[in-house]
Image 1 (cartoon, rainbow, N blue to C red):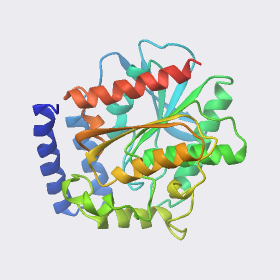
Image 2: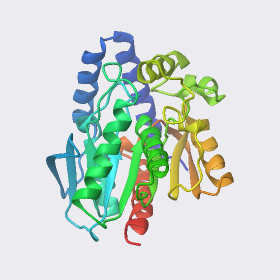
Image 3: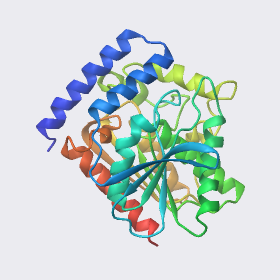
Image 4: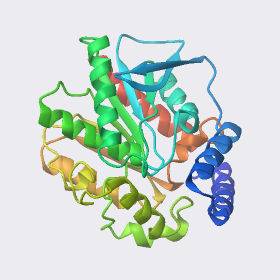
Length: 301
């Protein structure tokens, strides 16, 4: 049964994001407002050290849990519709994932659109992954990400496969945005209940900013249109109250149909990337713990 706390927090998040959207801030100010809100609202877990670093030429942060079960690591790609998000907005979530999977997590500040359209973010993700491989030869590397970062993690896995680079150990995805062409019914039918994307227009604008002159159906812009064979095992978490619900459903279906292994869990009453509220509500802690256990199992094999 959905907790009363989560029902309250859903209404609070929906109200606060509606007020922020209403302000119609220029993009730089909107990014700063999201960072300030993240610092206030999202709780860092106890026992995780934050360490600034650069990997493969990409700046970011290591999240280092006190307990580390081996030499494996996770590359975490933050969400923000490719136009926002940073180490600051997603520090607490990446730290909670590090604690739950018991492995270090690198959270890069990849370049954002529209200043840096496709393939800048993917190039940074590839560089960070190759940098981790170079610095830690033989270590297992998992991929994780939320929203746009989840789609970017999937595009990274597809690109690495096609380049013949050693595959990641696993994919742990939270509400991945995989179809920037916005062809799924939930992009419209769930908009009214989605605190982050209350209209298809916001997603459409972000998609065009990111894709630039590239087709929205390019398989590395929208991995919904990619071939999904020979990919790492995936665990996908999504909520019923979000516009990207069908992105996750279709991803799991297509991966399994093409011979890759994907498990999908749909959380009733949850909204887009509710996991950011870890430490504040049971459903967020449950999701992050399950994703962490999944990663740990594959990083230790």
